[in-house]
Length: 126
Image (tube, rainbow, N blue to C red; front, top):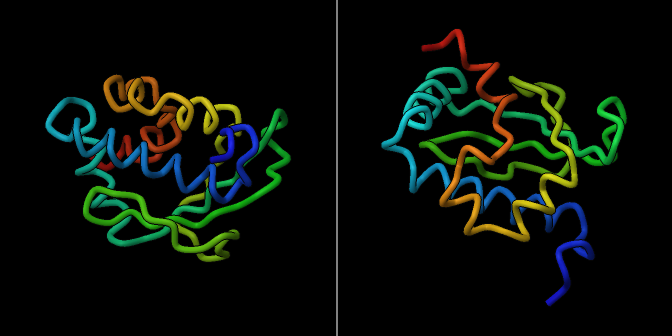
C-alpha cells in the first residue's frame, strides 16, 4: 500500500472524503455538526461543490474535483471542475494528507477538519 505522500491527488481526495463523511456521520448529533448538516441539505439540495486542491498558493489550484452533498454525506461526482457547481472552494493539499494519515483523530475530533469554507457558506441558511 502506498504511503499517503505518494498517493495521486484523486486517491488522496477520495480517502479524505471518506474520513470527512465518517466524522460528520459519527458526530451528526453534536453542535455545530448537526446544524452544518441540516444547513447543507437545505442549501445544496443535491447540488454540487467544486473543490480545488492547492499546495501553497490559494490562487493556484493544481487539481479539481466536483462533489455532491446529499443525505449528509459528500460523494465524488467527477474528477475535474464542474462549470455549474453551486459552490467553489479550495483546500490545502497538506490538510488532505494530515487527515488521511490520521483518520481516527479527525473522526474523534471533527473540529480539526477544515470545514470553514462550508461553515461560511452555510452561515446564512440557519
